[in-house]
Image 1 (cartoon, rainbow, N blue to C red):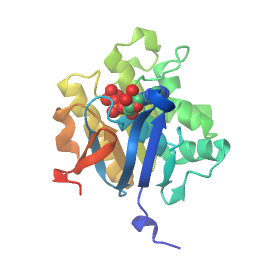
Image 2: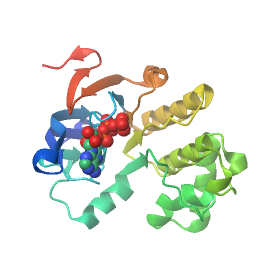
Image 3: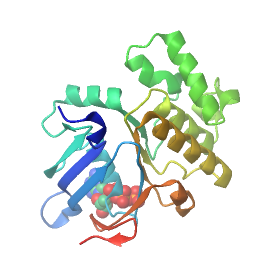
Length: 236
Ligand SMILES: Nc1ncnc2c1ncn2[C@@H]1O[C@H](COP(=O)(O)OP(=O)(O)OP(=O)(O)O)[C@@H](O)[C@H]1O
């Protein structure tokens, strides 16, 4: 058995992805290699359309690559059934999507407790954990509000509370500070980074926001479906 600490949180090799066929085909990923270690905070930056969300979706096993491999905590996701993927996501991953994907009929506390309820945790314990997560992102006083009663930035923080409510091994965030002002963005990044570091988890953040780059251990830059720089070092 390999040493658990030595197994990368994410390891991708040669990922390619095309959307559509023939003349309308778009090459979204052109052979991407990426490793993220446990405890590492990595930011993925690059112009609109360069393939960041596609890469995040493949890592999350929400989308299939055309070629290449991707492993989460040493488990290769390519050959997995839909059910096995869903189980892996529920057990190991936390997400913050670009669209916050909150359930409109549920309060902030109920939304944040969903991952624990899906994992079989009793409602009272799940909602207590959700309250703690909401407090961490500065929303304790909004826990009984519905999404429509919250601002965009508050909804985004509910989505972040939902992502950290169970201890994920890997947290994937697509533009987690896009709806937040400077102070709220810093607060959220401080919560996310301290949570993953204390858990020995990993954080992969897609962002256009240079203000949050100081929170990263490593900044990766993509262009046109490929990684062109890793922490300023130009890829070969
Ligand atoms: N479902 C789809 N069908 C067809 N083309 C798609 C689809 N999803 C993405 N694309 C295309 O693939 C390329 C990569 O898109 P992707 O969303 O991964 O980029 P991105 O870097 O995340 O962009 P942004 O920063 O604007 O969110 C783009 O050219 C996009 O138009």
